[in-house]
Image (cartoon, rainbow, N blue to C red; front, side, top):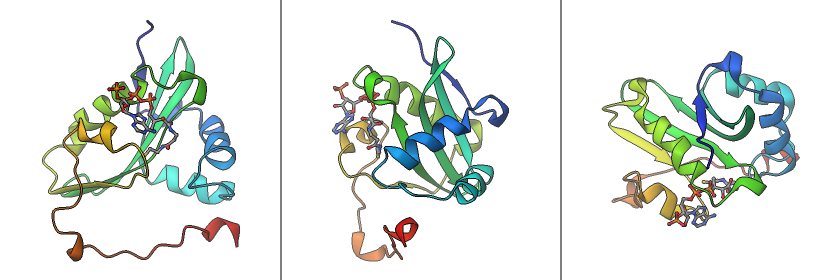
Length: 141
Ligand SMILES: CC(C)(COP(=O)(O)OP(=O)(O)OC[C@H]1O[C@@H](n2cnc3c(N)ncnc32)[C@H](O)[C@@H]1OP(=O)(O)O)[C@@H](O)C(=O)NCCC(=O)NCCS
């Protein structure tokens, strides 16, 4: 099987393709305006995975690169799922030198808990201490 090639060089990432997936196919960012998407990407550490030059996977980290990071926008294009590509991509994410020794790394997932458990994630030990302001329909208003 082809090995996933991972880059976090923005110049080598096809953001049009990422935008298309998130806007058309994700269940969390549908309807996101392009200028908002571009601003989010510009202020994040983005990882793209390609097979034989075709970009098929993506993940984005928002971080201060010292104490805290949040993982978002993780996806593998539908026809490539179930082949370990998310695992390969996330291995590179969590190996990145600027994301070591953080006090807290967070993420939110509806279904893929097993994927993230492989990397040491678990349900919050003290959920009563966590709060959020959440507006899931913000792009649809
Ligand atoms: C979640 C997603 C990124 C996984 O990509 P993938 O390349 O298929 O993942 P992998 O092949 O590396 O799977 C790794 C493991 O995670 C588990 N897993 C993957 N996706 C899962 C899902 N949706 N539900 C439950 N478990 C899942 C699998 O059981 C797999 O374990 P196994 O190897 O023992 O079978 C992909 O299904 C996807 O893009 N989904 C739509 C976008 C999405 O929901 N993203 C948000 C994730 S928080």
